[in-house]
Image 1 (cartoon, protein in one colour):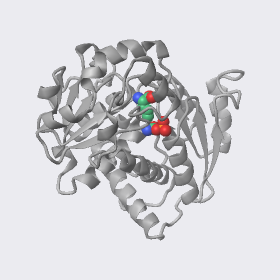
Image 2 (cartoon, rainbow, N blue to C red; image 1 turned 120 degrees about the vertical axis):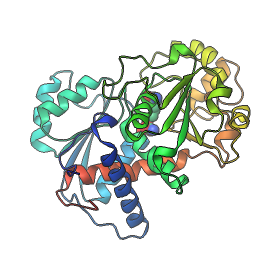
Image 3 (cartoon, rainbow, N blue to C red; image 1 turned 180 degrees about the vertical axis):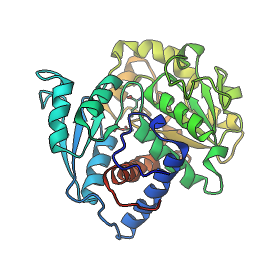
Length: 336
Ligand code: CP
Ligand code: NVA
């Protein structure tokens, strides 16, 4: 395998399965070293630009802490802070950033901006979430699954995804299933199934290891884990909540769904943030407006139970993003 030095990650399928397994191995190594206080700094003095057009807690903090742990520096560029794309084209801004930085993280709406940043900056660019994909999240999820089922090879995992199967998490999870070849059941109303033309020709949406159903009972039976995500993603119009709740409520992760898995060791994945209670401004508004008392995409009791892996996924954002930064920015051959 060639090293990942100077590689970008606009989507998960920019990597081969070998490269993904390598990133998971490197993440574990860096995680252990950090816990044992034996972390070596591989990217000392590197500079990383963090462009955020949409809000973030986990992704921003993971990039910042990973960079600092590894001796690199970051600049946070928020939606109203710079000329990028407003008074100056993405092309010109990318050329400027390319003269000052060693890598760029971009979170925003469009994948074409990512491509322009990469092409014109000539430095590695990493997708920290777009409308279409969220590859760094899925890297953390794969590490979490590997840690949770140490006796299983990733390709033998059987995962279900319930809810909005047209969003960035679903698209990146479908890419992961195709690259690694694990079984994935997509469970949602047919109108929420991914569009055929949406993903790459190399990894088509409709593939033999991906099973589509609108029937929850059929979809969750005997799976190892169930993944869910919010029903309205960042950047979507809030007027869509009524329709989404009506159509996706039957796909809520709740006790009934857990029973239907018939698996006493079932685990739940969620990228977070989750709308499982009223303790956030949006959670409060939506629960009250639509007379919901126990969570949107996941109930509060399942969220607070020990089968929920979402906080482990969150921690693993740090270690997997660190592995990405180290492997793309350091010439050193670590664990190859
Ligand atoms: N999961 C995730 O990307 O979280 P943030 O939106 O907080 O970055
Ligand atoms: N689908 C969600 C993921 C958040 C991490 C969104 O785009 O808002």
